[in-house]
Length: 281
Ligand SMILES: [Zn+2]
Image (tube, rainbow, N blue to C red; front, top):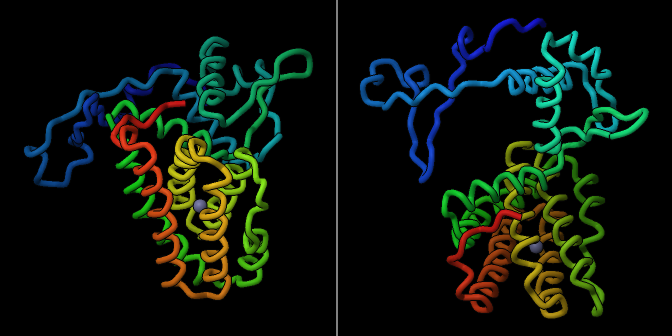
């Protein structure tokens, strides 16, 4: 696909620009018929050439079924394929690298390589937006408590019982008494990630994983691992049992209680921090 002009000029692609603090506006194109007078037209966002190329590269990654570790074509081939300058192509690749979607290997034999979908990248981007919007940990906790119990309930109903049983087997045991902080955080992350992945809803999976990564990395990491491990290990074990047994309402309730245990403990230990801005790390 050869590009000859900026596509904001001819394709009519616009996005709502909300600015900060958050304002929700609709563009006329997205307004409902007959309601266009009720909305504030947002300024058109100019999509740079490099961004348009980045979008094309992503489309091609998906269309060609590329997966983790697959190489993208060499720079000269991509310059020709996308019909852009080398600078625009490099900027496009840099955009994708910052998003964690590709890794650019330097040196001889290097080049862009496709990365997996890592929810930590979504967590990082989400944390940036939460921080800029003025969101605090209390709001993060409320979101977590609203969403993850639904996932636990859904997984308890999941049809492939063998898969659920095998995936949750490691969490049917308590933590060792001398658990380290790092082990606690990585195991807790893994438990919540497994439940998210078993839900068979990719949107819910990614949203919950983004939130729970922020919670685990920024909240759980402040707790004393030995004190926290007892409660967390016990909660995880009970939730895993309820899910494996197909007891959906119980799984939902236990997950909600588990989140309340963690968030209440955080509120009690760090009362000043609950209302502080979610950090961008
Ligand atoms: Zn947990």
